Image (cartoon, rainbow, N blue to C red; front, side, top):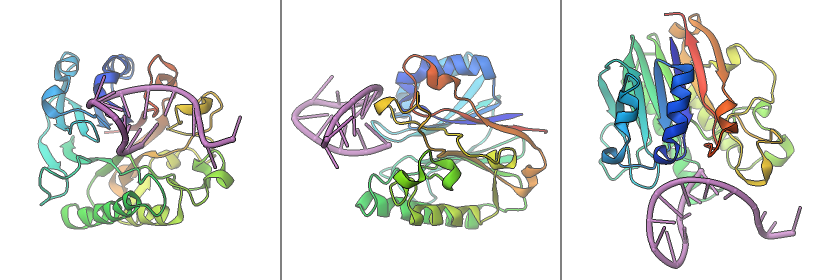
Length: 256
DNA sequence: ATGGTGGATGGTCCA
């Protein structure tokens, strides 16, 4: 069973690339972030044709998340419980094959010390509370998405350059670690120790060509899934295609 | 060198 996550930076701009990638990899689940698209404008038919059901929590212009699954699966959380529809669309959840899947688009934070940065830290604090209240860490739980944080020094191309900056500042890393302490393991790090593996490269200044990126897209799993995770990798190929997203998909394979 | 690119949008905001 393959479960994937991909920040597509506008699903309408990326629909051809996503369809091409689905035809190649055929994941059972694809979690999307940054749809930049209202629910009623989401290109559902393209994915239905390929056997996927779409659960969409969209928003015009910014944010937006969706879970695509082969076959049907139940509708779960859309945003934090109790939030109204004026909140940003950054979290969607479902259950697939007994696995509780939570797909998040963590706020970028823009600049350390800014209002958006404070919002990011608060959002991560709420994410931990969301798991405390709504999930049991002795069950299979998978948290994935664009976390907008590089967890450690291996996950940035130049530590000196990124130290203290947005996506790698100590408070962000601590806030993300607190979420992890709920009971998650980084599926990618189960299989790969060395640095230099990235999931996002800025469009500007030829950063992809020079492999100057960050690993900010993640698949985290609870203990019940650790033994079943046979492989987790970043597929850099679609980052080389025409009109790419600035993020590459991450895929985890499970023996279930 | 304070740039560079890309998406949504229709002058900027966001990443």
